[in-house]
Image (cartoon, rainbow, N blue to C red; front, side):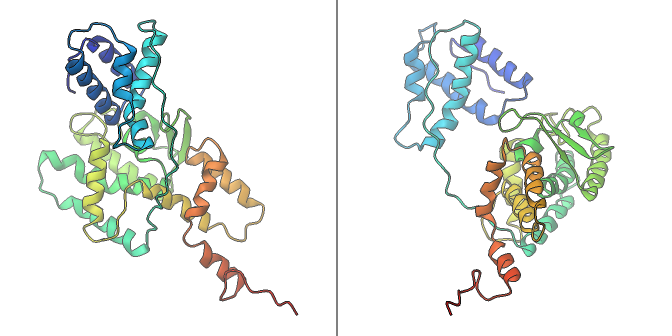
Length: 316
């Protein structure tokens, strides 16, 4: 990790340690904090006390930024100020976050051929040279991406899974902290559980005292950029359409909803189970996936036995 250089260095180090101990630290937070530290070093080299001006000048929304990107950049600074205020280190106010903008991006709808191609490419990772730096990668990628596909957990939840939170006896994942602070549990499919057991036996030989279930050679969890890079390499080996690893989560929700036909009142119960498993704070968030179900029109057509999704009315 890089070193802070501004007068705020001791407090920044303490804050980072606090976040790491709370399992809330990420590469995104690290980048924002170091950029803020650089801002202090460059523009306030002689100052020894944090002021409102220092915070406001860096957190002000830039002309090139949208609301969401600005929120992502300054959110760690909001957390820092709140941390300092609770400890009576400062009295300044945290910056106001811009209003969150609704995303209009529609996730990619995977085809069976695309998924077959993707997992074929994942399995071909084993053909990498038999070098130590590739040892973990060869066995992590085929399992990590299958876990995302079969469980619908967030990419950050999979990356930061601790060994102690994976129950390989009963096939249950304990998701402590992810988006928000809601703890929840995920039950693995039997085939995924068996694969996780095989992976655990293999990785144990390389890293017998590891902390994270999917560990790097340095003993930490895989970074967000590492996961994105390896997804792109495997995805585009045989596929052309644009996609991201996070869309495996969308696919999980969509496939579940697509399968709930002709089940009557059981639908509400299944929706609740899906919501809890995916770590949503309420069912309304899960209902968002209705707008992402590409096969819903086909299901309606099949059930109506008509060439039209909504049959025309015979007014006679």
